[in-house]
Amino acid sequence: MTNPATNLAAEAHGIVKRFGPIEVLHDVGISIPVGDARALVGRNGAGKSTLVGLLTGIYAPNAGEIRLGGQPAPALGDRRAWRQRVACVYQRWMVIPHLTVGENLFLNNQPRNALGLVAWRRLRERSMAALKDWDLDVPPDIEAWRLTVEQRQIVEIARALLQGSRFIILDEPTAELERKEVNRLFDRIRALQANGVTFLYISHHLEEIYDICRTVTVMRDGRVVADAQLSQFPKDRLVAAMVGDAAMVQRESKSAAKTGGAPGLQVSGLCRGEDFQDIELSVAPGECVGLAGLAGSGKDKVAEAIAGLLEPDNGTVSILGRATPMGDVVAMRAAGVGYVARDRHERGLFPLLSVADNLTATVMDRFGPYGFVSPARQAAMADGQIATLGIVASSCDQQIGQLSGGNQQKTMVGRALASDPKVLVLVAPTQGVDIASKQAVYDIIDKAKARGMAVLIVSDDLDELTVCDRVEVIFRGRLSRSFLPGWKDHDMVAAIEGLY
Image (cartoon, rainbow, N blue to C red; front, side, top):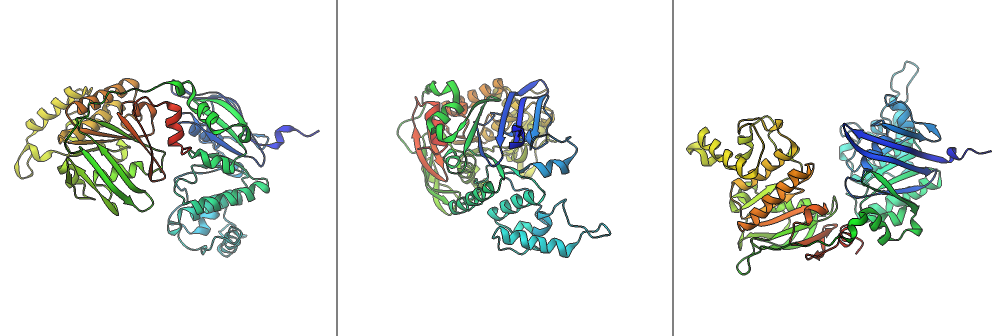
């Protein structure tokens, strides 16, 4: 009699995962048959990444069991056994840039000679054969950083198969691909499925999963809330499962926008390669507008262009009716743009400097002539900002790395406000902070509007978008829909996901 478990590429039963006191996965179960293409969907924070970390041996569950190919998962330290059973191709490519294509294909799996040394000729021959099988017209001795995004993904999938894995997780694989490249990827997935390779496909582009997947698992708030054949799960039902009861919540906002006069922020005909095209956006003084979209939709790039971090190919950005120089951060700040980046650790904080230094980094010229800084004047401004923004710190001299995430984020917003901007651009302003800190950031936004600033919030977080007076949705680089107060979560998610 056949054991049904042997027909499953991967399964998880009763999975509980905690990080410290926080339980992020609650009794999660999933079973993926051999040869399936399973979609794993859910909003940000639903638990998808944690589940993938468990299925790939990055984490161990606090409770429950994971099985791969009908067998218990290997010990966490046995990386070779994990690589033979499962591989994950991430949105951010994982090939090693300065190794050759051949070296990446056989990473940790190189053919050896009788002396145990790498058999380089055999490695090259086997690499050429693998590249030919994939119709990848690149030499095996070219360095991997020279490959296109599509070619890197092929190398990663081919490497997984060469190491023996028949279960491949694809995490947002199309985020940086053009449509023709997506079609080629899907053709390859179908061919591999026909040969018994199993895929778990994670994507925010819901229309794509109907092209390539057979079944779907929906996660929400750390739980599996739906498992179904996609043919029996229409798009509106899928969005409803992702959003939950919040789909019925209506949103209301009161605008403080000033009528008449020039817009605080006017973006006209803004284009930059494949990042975004023909962006038309207007934010009045005292108004808060949201720019919503998926990762890779172009929303972050638009924000960077407004802040001067990117130079667009065409288009203009005007502040209170005056055109601004493009691609110049200092000039854009002088023109009146305050900017808070998405990742405060990578692009915001100076972790070893004080709260005062971080708050005033953009206005150091105010504290003395010829590059000299008066510590007393700097401290006075920093103390005022700390009091106004509600930053909890022992003093303005405390190292910012010692503050909580919420207080660090308030400091980043305070830095953007220090130059008295006319336009405030905030990218995911409450990402990674607690509820109390979120409310504090929202209060800061309300005060900025009351002072007549034009506020642009760039996000796909529904809570952040609720504070906006209007939300513009961007999908694959183009504005697709506008929402006025009173929108519903279900409609907003559907628009963000590209279902309209």
